[in-house]
Image (cartoon, rainbow, N blue to C red; front, side, top):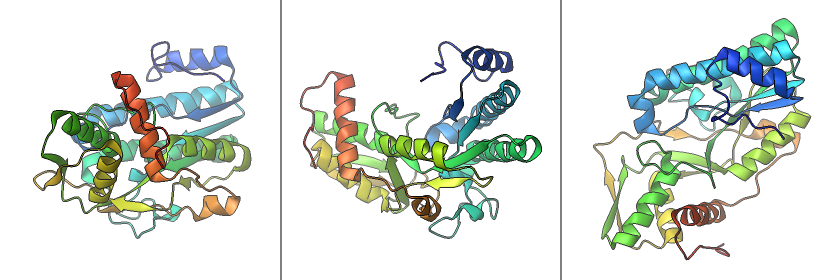
Length: 287
């Protein structure tokens, strides 16, 4: 397996990307590299999210085509879909309505990436495919509260509230919006499956098929972490898209389903977080 480490190659630079692919000569590429973040990061740095993701995708796809890479799988995001798309969201909902404003720049870049893959396929016959994962979580996640997604942010908040003996933990928004989550190991398994079994122009959803309110998620995180205080919703902060449950019917019809329950996945992620923080008391065996 080859990895384009960010410290060794800047995929935002065309020359760097072309040089790495020409030297490594990969048979297939999982294009997972991206600038990502939660509502705060997306809303305050739209130029970074749009530029970086456009450049990474364009450079890798062009370099892959020129080098004759056999297959490329482009990873998108569930935020490509309209803010008020019918639920669960099917693949043909793309470009049928306005996007969520707080992450519009990231969504536009990801839409451009999957459309670029389609264009190389149509014009050049390249075997480029696109998969749209739902919200991912797991070991290796970013727990920086200014940049993280909701689940790692909740883990960190609950952990710090527990250590501080706090009476309450605050979460953003009303807590009523719903989100779907998939453990990174399940996502990796699905992507390997698609690399072997899928070769169609239309992108395909990758998700768990189950969603939860943010308040329910926060309660589950607190149970796993062991924080017993109150959860306070800060309604002055944005909620984001009301609901983003993706239809996994096409992937399921191909023969793939996830295997890691959300509670087990959260426990696994918290164990990893504790190990990085040098904290004793992991949660092995929590079901």
